[in-house]
Length: 437
Image (tube, rainbow, N blue to C red):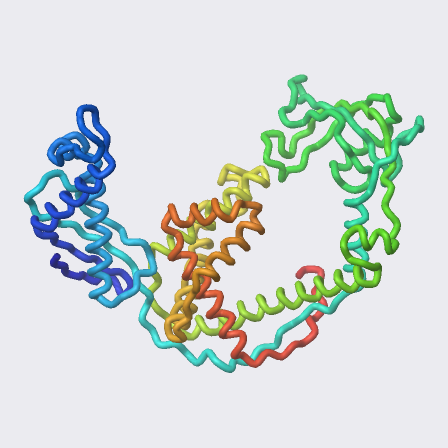
């Protein structure tokens, strides 16, 4: 194998590979032999199909696999000899093998970590603002738990529902022309009065009806819903089928034991501890972000275009999904033009990638590595937070060549932790936020 390297930019390289004809033939021969080992064809014993017959019959498959194998092996060897570390997948540019006895020429490109001098990043000073703990957080959490464990008790009354009571409602809607409004029909819908589950004018209809009574009225839909009727007025018909009251469990030792807290005192202290840990974690993440921002402002370097584009595309996909949820799928309804949104997201993508490159540089300098156990634990954590199966998630990362991305992600997080651990952090109480904030 022979190769030549061309620098397309300070962070992108192109490699031209020449594979001699004898190496091409050897690889095809190996692929044929590997296929024949377990091949079964009518008229031949298993594993005894002549190589010429197998190659002729399965030529497309064999030559495709031989191409992939040669590209991967030659690219890996060239990169190793170049003594560089790609931070993106190689971008292959070349043909597929079609015959024996000929040289095989192809090229591939990839991006590398920018070369720059790290500024002083150890011993930085920062004030970490921690939000003071409000005891009301504990009470609110306990109330949410009580609500989750509550029971519904039917009410035998002949009056409209009161705030806090639950109404079981059947409803439907039509537009001005009497056509059904898609997505606005329900049977036995469970509505807790006064909790803001439905729009005020919708709930106002329900609050006038006793069990068994029906009523109707006009409802102006929220402009942010993802529906063609967003912001329009529809005609709603509703029937209150029955009423119930929500019975919340009392805060007793038995209640605390039922949720695994042991006692009311332990329940309150555990909830408070969890909230305080969250406040500390948020404060730490905020401090880490400020530390990284202060560092990347001190240096300039070329950014890998592929990574910037990938990040920008991901941000754009998230933005479009958010706009769809807000009932604004058409760019003409956005607050900014599509071009302005893309420009803004490009800046965000560039800042993100710049920070990632900085952290990878520290990871490289400090020889930060990632163990298989850390990778497995990281994937399990992602799966648990996303409600996915850990094994399926691991297979997805393997099958889509995302393991190197996972390694870099963990290395950058460890590098950011290192910056924080070596900084001089002073904890201070966060200032009260203004209404605008």
